[in-house]
Image 1 (cartoon, rainbow, N blue to C red):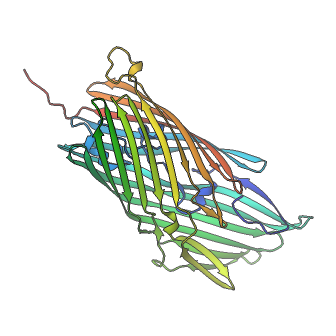
Image 2: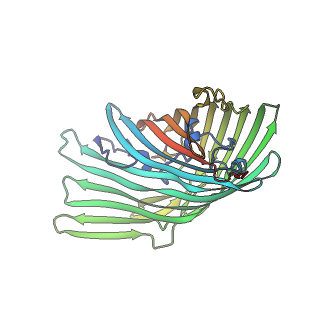
Image 3: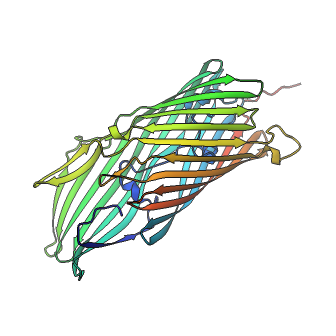
Length: 429
């Protein structure tokens, strides 16, 4: 379980499935990190740093906006539902949730200059579980601890991608990061009338900036190779995080509250993020690629409350996380995107796998590693003056840890990409 137990204590953990995210690991850092990819990327398990297509908005690398078709206005939105299974020892529990994933749009502003805007998730927080500890063999005394949390961060952004030279593109996303969280830890003792509660909160309103570059080489008439790179700026994001310690005597009804710290003394932080990708495109029928992402969480200060030698403090401490390294492989296949005879030949088939190293540290030990796999379909449908796509993806994510909880999540995402021919030039005869 996610807490340390003292010697001689017997513990029982009870989980609730009422929260939106349903992940006990979201009680750490800024919460459970979201997959920011769109409906196409989710079918390839988040791949996208080197993905480049005239009919899609790929906000994972803003340099790709320069490839957007000059006649189109593209709008992409998605919803997801998931079932998670948590295992701790011999205990298992299932949880369900549904979320709005993203909404992004893009169009060509000028020759070789693309523009995009939208809203995407950054992190989610949602958990509710309790731990009961009984002291001694009789189990007549002990205490219980209830852990609750909810909230998360989202980003609204605008971005541009420019191709100043053939095969060379640059881009930038400027975003506004907002959201809040509330976390609590409540201890109740069976042989005492006093309970001790800790309440943590923050409210983030700050900027976020990401840069991207893509280099595309034509290997032959039908083959292209794209190299991509991204850089996300790491910086302090404020939030005015606070911690309140409340000691309540149920017999007298008196509560003693201590707050740490005063407003403006602490700030939350974003890690620097570096990404690199490679994708081979054969005649717009085969796309095969690989991504690598490095988030420098070890350099980020996390907030920690401690009470040692009678001195209590709530402060920012570095070294409570490891750097996150994530490797992804993915592919997309379309039998014949230009086919007019066979509808089945225009369907796109996608698949991907990924591995992420543990970046959380829990009680001084590495948290769970993550492995995942996905499959997806891109199903075209036609409306007047529009060529749009229904994108369906199924993903399995496993967070594996020998010391802590192991989780398996099955996620279904449904997205629709509307490709409207807004900028067609009509010819009058």
